[in-house]
Length: 115
Length: 115
Length: 115
Length: 115
Image: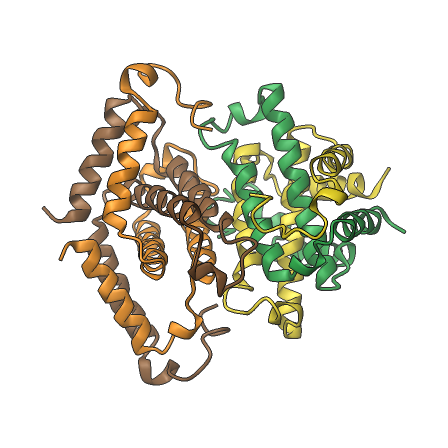
């Protein structure tokens, strides 16, 4: 069993032990995922791009916690939809490599090309 | 090397090969993370909670792609801040178990307790 | 002076009196806007669509507060980019009416057409 | 009738003419609001704070469109919950002025105080 599958099992057990399955569906979990991602972002709201590399320790810890919540959300939505996350990720990376060939994007500003 | 570390290396190589490191900082990546999470959510905007379990195949594939983008964002922000994602996740789960004891939340609606 | 212009002036004065202009740029305010929108959404995370019509009074008040923050964000981003919000809104409604002719969308599920 | 009430009437008519009322509830509209806010943010993802003041014309137009969508979302959620948006906004500004007295926040970085 790979690590993402292990984490999926850990999250699933956590949810089941609390009787939360009844509230969990892909729609509600996708909402939670978006809310958690915004909580990561909130920590960077008023710092500059340069400052964002050197967060104070307690803020860096808070970001680590929020990132864990986002990761949990990703794992949980994938689980509820029976999506193999490792496989989906590998397949998306293949597509990304095709979509952005290094020789084509190299040296060009990424700014308005990803949008 | 665990799987999350492998994915971190894959993403790092993808970014470096494209000369995108110069644009990548935790602030900009946290923005990207939030934008990608919203792209997951967009697919559930007009479906009911019940319908969200049984997405049409092409929509389920799109959600898998967007979840992969969110996972990439989580891995990338963690990498730029030198956060060990597996460790952060394990530590957050310990906190979650303490915060929500099964015997206390069991049978109660989760609705207004997590907020 | 129309009401949206009045609100813009109110927000501008609030910001200037606190010396916050130096931190305000369209990028940071767009981040704030997204964070505030997620705070609205958070209140609906675990309630059903039907329940979302009848929030408890204190929650309805909290949503009103968060909606005000989102409105402030919209006004502020528009102000910083010198966008006439009333004009932009009217112009977008013209486009929406053209894009979604009543006779075409009538009776069809909106679900997968807006995406 | 004030301008926000006029806009509310315009949006309400737009929705009703398309038979979309059946899909509109505060929960789904709060999702739409968050998705639209992320679409504003997406335009600022790879530009610097300084560059965000001087967007190319077509991008500035796109931001104006997305801001209009967010405004529509705010108006629509408020309408569905029977919230008087102008009143809520005025009340929130009173609270903001109390929470952030100019003499207290003046000259201090806003960075970690709003969070």
